[in-house]
Amino acid sequence: MTDAVLADTASPVTIADLRGDQWWRRAVIYQVYVRSFADGNGDGIGDLAGVRARLPYLAELGVDAIWFTPWYESPLADGGYDVADYRAIDPAFGTLAEAERLISEARNLGIRTIVDVVPNHVSDQHPWFQAALASAPGSPERARFWFRPGKGPNGDGIPNGWVSNFSGPAWTRTQNPDGTPGEWYLHLFSAQQPDLNWSHPEVRAEHEAVLRFWFDRGVAGVRIDSAALLVKDPALPEVPAEPGPGEHPNTDRDELHDIYRSWRAVADSYPDSRILVGEIWLPDIERFAKYLRPDELHTAFNFDFLVQPWDAASLRGSIDTTLAAHAPVNAPATWVLSNHDVTRPVTRYGQEDSAFAFATKRSGTPTDLDMGRRRARAAALLCAALPGSLYIYQGEELGLDEVQDLPAHQLQDPMYLRSGGADPGRDGCRVPLPWAGTRPPFGFSPAGATDEPWLRQPRRWADLTVEAEERDPHSMLSLYRTMLTIRRSEPDFRDGRVRWLPSASDVLAFARGEKFICVTNLSGAPIELPAECSLLLASAEPTAGFLPPDATAWLRSERSQAHDRPSWHLTEGGE
Ligand code: NOJ
Ligand code: CA
Image (cartoon, rainbow, N blue to C red; front, top):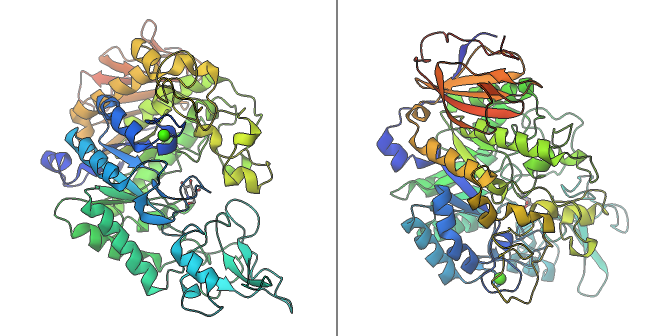
């Protein structure tokens, strides 16, 4: 393996930019799933009061921004991704005035706020959809959605064969006011989330107004839910077996770019930087990068890395492809190990086949949590050393595992419900955080609360509370805190380049800037670390200069690595 300059995502960005306007290029963004972060009023549901009380924790962790999953008024049929009113906070979470206070309190601690917007669909309780249901076929109220007559003489055949992302048909039939069966409407997710028609000018205007509403309240950015799904081919044709680029009738349609150009114009109309972050799951990385052209989104989640198995070639391939795709559009990459939709990394990496795909998510997979924890620690250091921004999903910094034995009556995820239980769903990564103490609710709710957390916390989390981990210098939390401290101050991280260094095939080693080196050992044996390097941080303690398997080390070389060929070669067993 030769060393090579793989990609240069470095842009003409100054340090002043990074402190101010270009902060998002290498920010650390912490995802708060409000319902499960901290409960301020003791009803067992996380809320804004809980977040406000815990802001100092996030400041100490060292994050630059918080992304809040939807906190708007919602029946919570899909955890808030079914929005009934974009301009109101769900009463279970708090009030708009409280959200405004939270935004400014966070800002005073140096933490920016990113809110989630969900443009593909609304809740079936949204006034627009309620008005559509109350109106006749062909009415202007229905034109904002995708209403269609059913096929066949009685209209009981579904309009097309599209499948919901939560399994089952993407269509539900309505009832006419007289009780007879009526038209069908499209929902790419649950039936409680009707899809909006993005060719309708009011749909576009309303979302731009929503962006302004939140930007005017001081939010620094928006995360755009299901960002590649908004536009549909109006003919609603069947999905071809192998759609070519831009040919899928409901995903990644070329017309989307025009929408995001208008959104960018809204963001850029503010004097300081307001950013757009797309949730874009696309296998075609070049199509993905098109959304990041300079007049479109600022960044988008890179999910390719998190779906890779724990394997050096796969991870290196993903890093190379990601950096190479971002370079031409001069957008920073993002690194994501987890979020509220995927199996917690400690569990994922604890499974022999750690490649992740929703389609294969099954409960009961044999899991070695110790191995998973070692690998999750190593993966965290690997991601945090790469150029771009870094996302941390709440509880990842505590090393929480996926809870796979929640009582069936508590499960709420439509992925579980609509699949008839075939898919275990995503509740297991959304269990309320353990903060302190030795028993549930582990400080999630205040002392004396009578209601239990909305999802049951496992007793084994007693060792994984913030309180317990703060005391333990070897905990995941201590690792994340140190990692983020170094990441903030490391001068070599200002250079956007990654240079691979020669190494055995199951070892990943790369240099950043002049002297920083990151080494991940994915082999089964310890590897010798180069003597001329000092150790900045390791996910597992090296022994006698050897880095154990499933570990990452951050090193500082005494010699410049930027231009010279490194003088050492990492080998297994330290030959
Ligand atoms: C992606 C969100 O992250 C997920 O939680 C949600 O279910 C879907 N989009 C639908 O809004
Ligand atoms: Ca509460």
